[in-house]
Amino acid sequence: LESGLLAGKKVVITAGPTREAIDPVRYISNHSSGKMGFALAAAAAEAGATVTLIAGPVHLPTPERVQRVDVITARDMHTAAMEHTEGSDLFIGCAAVADYRPETIAESKIKKDPNSPDQTLDIKLVRNPDVVASVAAKDNRPFVIGFAAETHNVIEYAQDKLKRKKLDLIIANDVSDTSIGFNSEENAVTLVGADFEETLDKCSKRQLAGHLIELIAQQYNLQTSN
Ligand code: PMT
Image (tube, rainbow, N blue to C red; front, top):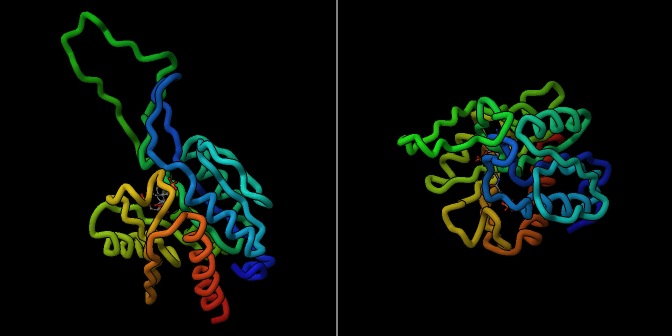
């Protein structure tokens, strides 16, 4: 990876899951480990960028020369992303943000009633804000790259998200294959733009992040030189 590739650029990256509380001891979340987003942060820093990494709850060390902002919920991630993208050049949304959160957080631990015949519990969920779409909707927005984690029709759904969320690029990630994607050491993706598509074969998330940063820098330079 060329060390001057993103010199002078301010890059903000989200990584990991978010965690949405149900009560003081329980939450809704997903299997994102943060590995892909942390690898992208490390690669962007190696390419010379000033990197802010907004991380959900993960167990990973902060890459060298990266400023880390820890968050728990989707709403926290949204607030942090809106703040840290002020004056930024590129934004990469790699986090697996929870689409929904419980409408209310019970103040004390939810107890089961041992005398009730009812075997179900209803938890009403409400939509969370969309972090990457909110960044893309800002005035003076950075160059915005999202991910699309899909189990089927991967490229088609990625193209749909690219348009709907008004992104510059999207990284299509087939998460039906458990050897790649969520919480694995390796990954394989297709980088998709309005008139651009490039598939990167399976390799370690660190290697893949290097390739992705190179391709993203190329596409960014093409757009900003126009
Ligand atoms: O963390 P790892 O274990 O290394 O796994 C990596 C990964 C599989 C999590 C990563 O490669 C990946 O695919 N991340 C995106 C996961 C996801 O939530 O995808 P999505 O298709 O549901 O969301 C589309 C895009 O919108 C993503 O850029 C996501 O960050 C963003 N989004 C979604 C919902 C929301 N409320 N706010 C968002 O910003």
